[in-house]
Length: 342
Image 1 (cartoon, rainbow, N blue to C red):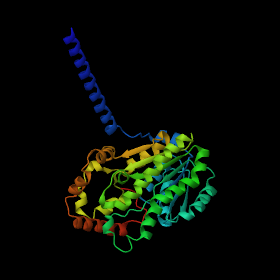
Image 2: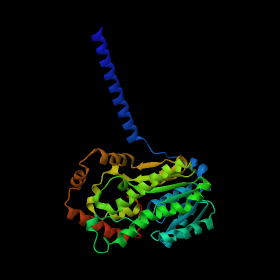
Image 3: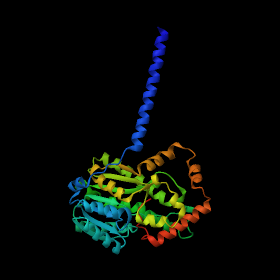
Image 4: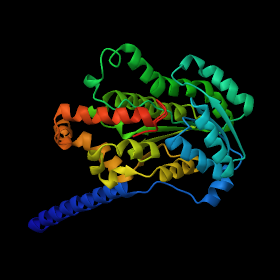
């Protein structure tokens, strides 16, 4: 009997291990394969009609396409960027797509001391706002040590990049937070996979996105602790093929080798962002498989840095040459820093 009892106990233990492994595998599968919430155009119209949406960084890329998706749902838009001509074009297109109203405000978000006045201009148009989309970004695409001295390694350059990518996000949140509390509104933050894992080819940009993630994930907890009615959604995005990115990458043959599963469709991103106004997720990964894989990869492979270097298949100098060509192309294609995200 004792032998039978011991064997039964062993079988039970093995069964529990197998069950635990099955649960783990299912959980991993759900984590990597779960789809982001998206709603039909009809549902979006029913839920978002007449909502006031402020989009910072709306002149091109993700911000522009998202503006059109909100317009199709009948929202009232306030579009901001530095380029008045580009904003006027986006405004006309948004009105054609069904926006209830579209107002444009030119704003240089590197000048964080002016953001208080920016809020006053927004509220002069709409006393109540429902969504604040923080999408503007500066994208220095170069290894940090390869940034051209003395200008691009100087504190003034770094400070400007952080003003645009981080401090303006925080200041916009600060000045609009009470307004969003009054409307039970939402802050939407376009971040990047570069804020989840380090990559030497865009270290300065990645450091700003790490800072953005750290601030807004902490803010999510603080809002919960205060039982606030404001929600924050952070969008961790991979390589999103906007028109600007397509044009920039077409100048460099090596970039055509980027696997398709890493690339994301800008229209799908816009649909996900607008749908998040209803579902209010705390975090969204897109493209799902590649971003979730990279999110976990860094933490489970202690030789991650060596893998990244090996994966480039190039020497440091070759990498810098490619990045320099991409940066030169971006100067002729993009409006300085209204460049979306990678």
